[in-house]
Image 1 (cartoon, rainbow, N blue to C red):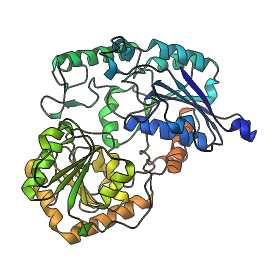
Image 2 (tube, rainbow, N blue to C red):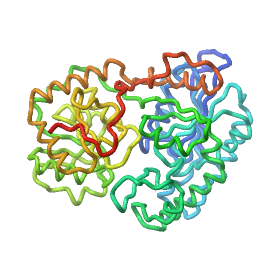
Image 3 (spheres, rainbow, N blue to C red):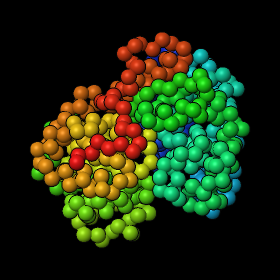
Image 4 (cartoon, helix red, strand yellow):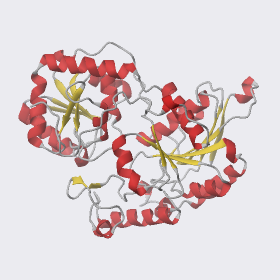
Amino acid sequence: MDDLALGNRARTGVLRSTLTVVVLNDFCHVQGGASKVAIDEAVGLAQAGLDVIFLGAVGPVCEVLRAPPQCTGSLRTICLDQPELLDVMRHPLVALQGMWNRAAFQEATRLFAGLEPRRSIVHLHGYTKALSTSPLRAAEQRGIPIICTLHDFFAACPNGAFFDYQAGAPCLRTALSLSCLGAHCDKRHRAHKAFRLARAAAQRLDAFPRRVHHYVTLSRRSAEIMRPYLPDDAQMYPLANIVEAPEAPPVDVARNQALVHVGRLDEEKGVRLLADAAARAGRNLVLVGDGPLRPALEGRPGLRITGWMSPAEVQAELSAARALAFPSLWYETFGLVVDEAASRGVPALVSDISAAAERVRAGETGWHVRAGDMDAWVRAITALDNDADVSRLGAAAHAAFWQEPPTTSRHVAGLQRIYDAVLGATVPAETAPAPGWPFQAKPSRPGSTAAPQ
């Protein structure tokens, strides 16, 4: 076990009673979006003066957790050094661990015994790859309030996406209903679906999500989808993800030619449809990322696949983009790259059913396009030929983003107000809107389109 006591409380001699936040996450390094948010929040909260304990299952511990920036609070990391589900062939028992992690429960029980419930918060992020929901039982036994960030839909849906991978479309079944139990909706095979159902059952036996009454939501769309599956008295707090972008003048998008997509190259992301639509519209396409679809798409004329890139390299690709494409076929919960593009003055074409549509004003800062509709995407991509429209929307997206950028400091301030609410304090009226949501318009209803004609 890797237990790192990190912070500068001893160096500064500052000793005061403050809030202790225990961050729960599968990974102690950036493995995906949930882990990045969990780590960024842990560091930001410690810098803001809180005592933070990061409890994760899978190592190694990343550098920013090992040696965080100067903090007025403290940051301690406990890593259980366990395998993740992807290691099941080498470690078969990880399947049982993924359902209910006994070691995590025992460690959490020891940890929580030393905390004051009235001055502590347990904040759950990722839990489906290794950690499981077992630490929540320990938190409830100790009487420590719990909050969960809904990075995905695993709290309700066994495959975490409300998406039927076999049909290639959003799933309209009620989660864990008889039709859900019998459906072959997993992207792999029925055995994988069976494991996911068993894990979901273990979560229900562990009273999750019933035992959690406070949730951070990343979008209205994801909150609406999850609401029926949460406790009747569940409180939902909107808070946008952190987007740390260099402030600079907007890109001259009219001088650029390429349409850019950033993310995993997978069917549910709409990447195959996007590639076909771009080819029909005669527009060069850059796919920043990697995934299962790469072999099928690589080598097409006018299409370039970069593989995974560093944040700085992604910024360079966005700077050379005429527009960003976000063609996802599933609902998503946020869509970080849309904000990253807006910070550079790059307008976005977004799927109308995705949560990212909430942060694009159709016809003003980008376009909404009917999800999965080839003709609609061809029309939308063809409309990028209009230099004046592309420039106008890009400039508007840039201005809207920088009007209230979702920086770390703004995000952490919003998170602290949420913690106050969870602990029973009064939340000031001005904190009701989601920090960092530049646009408050509702997303298009599924099946509608606001794409250029």
